[in-house]
Amino acid sequence: MRGDGVNSQAPFVLTADRIVAEHARMNVLANLLTFKAAVIEGMNIARSADGVTLSIRSGGRVSVGETKIQATVLRNLASIGSFRSKRDVIVLLAGGAIPKLELSRVELMIDGYLMTSYAEIPAMRLEVV
Image 1 (tube, rainbow, N blue to C red):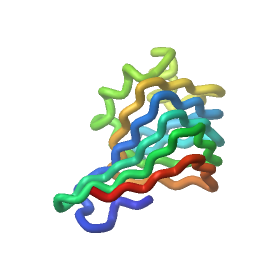
Image 2: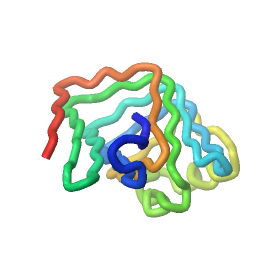
Image 3: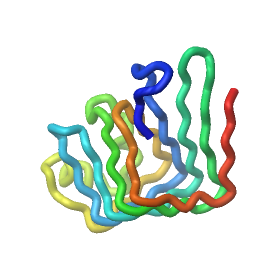
Image 4: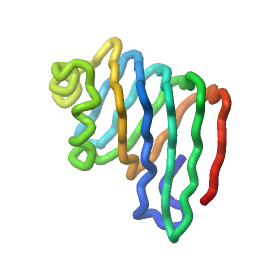
């Protein structure tokens, strides 16, 4: 998903009950979070622009492959509370890798893009309001 549609200033918001990602890395200068694979529980991706909200939800466990998320780091500092291990935040900001990154009660503003090699989204619902 690239944020270049109706109103490119409106970010996507990824919320999830839990995310477990494998081999996570962050490039702070590029505002890029990458991981090899992840399982996402309680996923919702929404975007509101021009009075319309588009939402993709899953009631199941979403599996994604190699993923890149470009999102302004400073804009997402509030998400630090999602990290199960606060040490992981420091390692990622320093450019290190986390073999198994665990996040809970996630709310991530994606003001760049989200790209994945594949996604299995069981019980997917698309809503336009």
